[in-house]
Length: 338
Image (cartoon, rainbow, N blue to C red; front, side):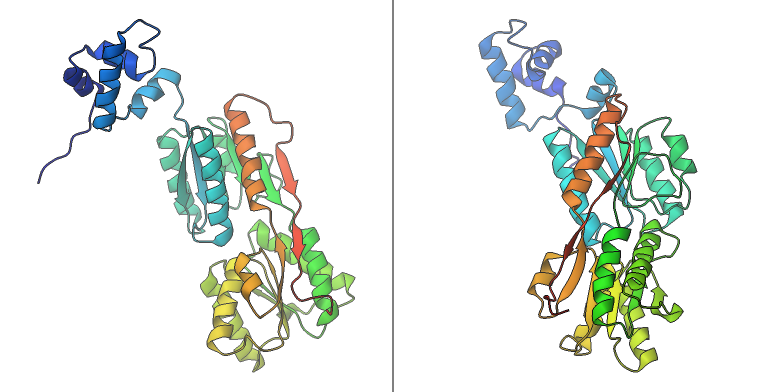
């Protein structure tokens, strides 16, 4: 099998019949400035294009002591919210001439440590992390070496730079509206109870019920994880326990609702009168016959705030607002009849 060989600056110099130093000047954009003949410059550049020459990133690292890369750590790249965030952040990086490296943890703290170590070993200039860890001690230590920005999730009382969406206030407003329409029973389907998004969205759920004058029953709270399969299993178990579908549910994330809708579709429940609300929005909800009210995060802005924060820190600037909480908006699809 033929072994491929990367084209080097020495190869281009040999093909052009010039010294490596001359080829380097031309390829680094300094040929005209240092009086390399126009014909020579054009020959070198033409050969570089013909042979798809790309300068070594390692040489660039040695030259300016930066990798021009950012590391992004997320629990699950297939999650709609994290996928949209990753796409928005990658666009921002590309426009700024940076490379984004993405690693997934599968909600596993041990795996998170491994992928973070791998990104640090690749000399990323900064990290943006949606962490599954219970405390920030590892990241506080790491922040002494490079900028670390947390997003979407936080550890209690952390002082690390942080960007997230307010979960409590909009969830309370949405659940209050849901409770006034279906006060008999409203189930909360959430992710891992130890994670801050679950805690905050459950607190919003409690506050919303209280505002509507509805007493929370312990059996209304059901926890799983944030995978769609968990939403499917929790809803299936709930239907089995009740002997019927619940009258109203609030799902704590888009992935959980995906699993619920899959179960409902398989069991011909999409036409049933079930009141559904969820944290996180998805454009496909506008196409469903089933009306779903949601809390919508401004994910592109979330990415923009994280990017601005980490790049400012990389540049040596002290962030004016190291911890930012963004507002969410409510999307009502069920109409004013509720």
